[in-house]
Length: 132
Picture: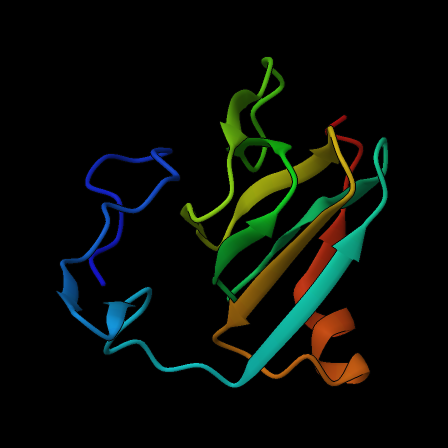
């Protein structure tokens, strides 16, 4: 999986699919080390994140629903960039980038993180902000 090519592009380019008479195989992520994989459900109107990670990064895949994903560089006081994420899209969050998610529908997404999400590890790397 290639990271988005420009800073603050968040949606990753799709990888090739394999199809035959049995169905289809879609590679979503490849060659990236992870320490945790989370499946997260969110109700319509919920806001998640509103933080940044000092060192961690993560890739997320929206399984169902729809969300608005917001981000901006740490220390920037301008309006954050907003991207609407649709089912099947893979998106990337860099370290030192404030980010937040607002769910426009009941949604399910998967989060693939470099660092362990054990509570002590997560808290020592996470800085909470009020992005949205």
